[in-house]
Image (cartoon, rainbow, N blue to C red; front, side):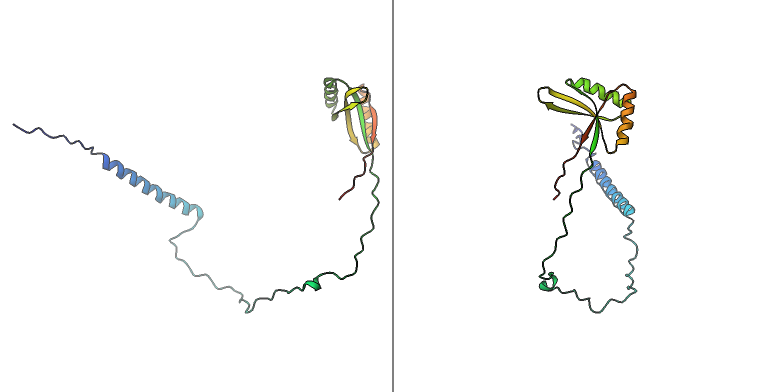
Length: 176
């Protein structure tokens, strides 16, 4: 009887896949090195020329560092005189125009929006007042000069918004 032909149980493509991966990695590494050298502008294959000698001769001896004597550096034993203390200047008063005070925060927001439509920037200050509860004040300012106050007050009056002048004198604070 004839012997049946044996089938080859090994895969024939195993070596070719490994070879392809190895070639791909090698080509990729060579390309990465080439791109890195191209970006940095360095050429490892150029001949290295020796550096040129400096045009100025180097000094034979280095300059001596100054020596300090502790007791000579200190000021003399005479007591120092402090400058005269200046009297603090009176702080200039700041002026505000109070357009309203409301118990309801929504009413204060509505007035602030109405002022914004006129081009006037307002601030809502919330505070507690004795016997009246929480009040939301709508204030415009601060102003440094009275002519600014008068211009803004006339604009508010033209638009039927009553306002009250509030003068605030800042307390002088001690500076360190």
